[in-house]
Image 1 (cartoon, rainbow, N blue to C red):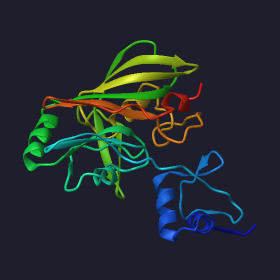
Image 2 (tube, rainbow, N blue to C red):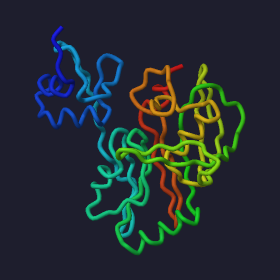
Image 3 (cartoon, rainbow, N blue to C red):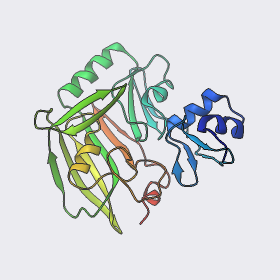
Length: 248
C-alpha cells in the first residue's frame, strides 16, 4: 500500500501549505477517526481521511490599563493567546490543552507586582478537571516535584529532592467511574496538577503524557476556572460540553 508523510497528505486534502498542515498536527487537532495524529512526519496510507478540530478564538474576560484576563481555548499556546493583547506580557502559562484564565500584564509596574505576588504565593488559583476513577473525599497532595527539560520540552515527576508542591482536591461530581474535581494549588510547578493526580491513581482524562485514558475525548479535561490576585478576581466559564466530553 502506498504511503506518504501525514502532513503532506493533510496539506493536499485540505488545500494547505505543508508548513500549515504540520502546524495543525503538532497542535494536536488532527484526527483519523477517533485517533489523534501525533507525528507529522509519520507515514500513513495515501487514502487516509483526516478530521480537523475547529480552533476557538480567545475571549477577553476583562481588560483595563494595567492587566487583561483572557479565556484561553484548548489547543492554543499561552504565547499565541497573549498576542490578543498588543504589547502584553504573560504573567504565567497554561498547557496547550488546558483552557481558562490566562493573565497578561499591560504595564511593567503591574507585571512586577504580579510576579512578586506569584512568588509570595499570594495568588488564589482554582481549576476544574475530570479524572479517571472515583474520588469520594477531599484530599491534599503534598509531593515534591522535579522538572526535567529535554529537547525543548519539559516534564515533571515526583522526587523527594524536588521542589515543594501542594495541591488540594475536592470531588464535585461522580459519573460512572470518573470524577469531576475542584482543584486549588498553592504552588505552581510545571504540570503540577497532572503529575500529582497521576501519583494518587487518578490521571486527568485525556492526558496522554501522564496517563492512559479510555475516554473518547479530543483534549485533556483541565480548565483554569478562577484566579485572584492584587484585588482582582477573574473567572472563565468552562467550555461548552466540558462535562459531556468526560463520557460516563
